[in-house]
Image 1 (spheres, rainbow, N blue to C red):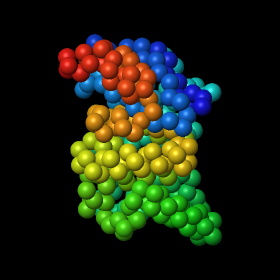
Image 2: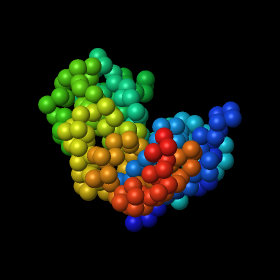
Image 3: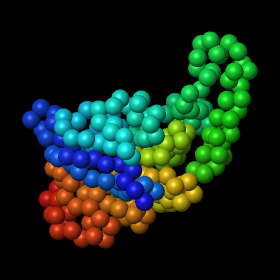
Length: 252
C-alpha cells in the first residue's frame, strides 16, 4: 500500500486562533483511517482544508503524486476526492434515488444544447440510474429508493450522504462524523458497510468521528489531534492508550 493522501506541516488561523498548527499526517490507500480529538481540536478544519473549502495559510497537501494545496473544491472533487458533512443536506422533496442522481458527474443532460437532443443523454441517464440503484443496494437502501428524503431517519440520511459521495467514483472519501446522532445499531451497520466498500472496491476512507466505542472496532489506523496539532497516530490500541491522548480527552 502507498500513501494516497499526504498532509505536511499545514497551518490555518482564524484571527488569533490557530486552528491547525503544523499538522502532518498520511493516509494509506485501501485503509479506513479515523481522525479523533476533543471538540475544537481542529478536525473539521483539517477536512475543510484538504477538500478546498478553506485555504491553508502554510503547508502542502498531496493526493497521490499530485499537489492539491489550495485547489478549489470542484477541482479536488474531479481529481478523485469526495466528502460528506456533519449535517446531511438533503433535497427533501426529491426521492432518495434522485438525491443520488444529482451527484452524478459530467451528465450531458445538464448542457443546454445537449439537453435538447435526448439521444445525447438518454443512455448516460439510464447508466446513472443503474449505478445509483447498485449503490443503494450496497448501502441497504433499496426499499427507500422512492421515499422522499425528508421522511428518512437521521441514520438513513447519513447513508444517502455516503451514497451521493460514492456516485463520484472517487478513490478517497472523507467522512465527517458519519454516525453522529445515529442509534448504535445503525451506527454499527454504517461502519460495517464502509468496511464492505473498502474490501469490495479498494476504496480509502478518512473519517472524523467522536463515537470511539463504535468506530475503533472497524478502523485500521487512528490519528489523534488536540489544540490544532497531531499528538498521536498508529493502530487503535496504540493511540487509545497513548498518555497524550488520554490527557487530551480528560482535560477536555
